Image (cartoon, rainbow, N blue to C red; front, side, top):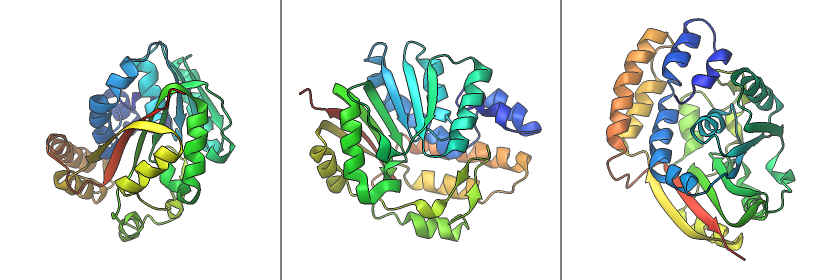
Length: 267
């Protein structure tokens, strides 16, 4: 169950809910549906992969993949020490021996051909001004033929203005106590621009998919504006999840997110 490992970081009734049903976050559910469709076949094709989860946050995807692929080993890195501390506690509590976590900014990544797959989910746009350098570091860290799996915001979606309308432009924390400064969001990407930067870093076989269409946007808006009461959020979550699930089967011509898969050159 996606997110069930995080139950121990929640309190009261929420702990039971997360333990029984996993995360209630509609965004996380929608990403899971799409990742299962586009990313899991790639992960299944790589036996005993070593995976770098770059920007692991609370470890949601690291733990999900650790359960789903016990033959893979996963290193999660994040610039925030509080995130790494939470992940380390969960790893110990859940006995997930195929995961490790380390505090490390992207600008200090210095691995050399150590990983079969790198995940970068909603992380690259934080470093928009130096993203080519980050992509070069990802490329160096991958083995020849290795995969970079990313999600980034689509241009011209104005994320900062959306966050401001929701009162989330700065100084907020998520439900597990990891500090997040939403003012750090740097930019969003046009497909041609991102493709060129991937080419510069030595990536080929690029795949781009737009995610989160109109139904998904309605669902997200309903969920984020819901009451803070848990029962109300569960009801809204059920309705929103249905919309988002239907939305995964519809073309997202003006989608909010790029899901990309790029393979490092074999040389």
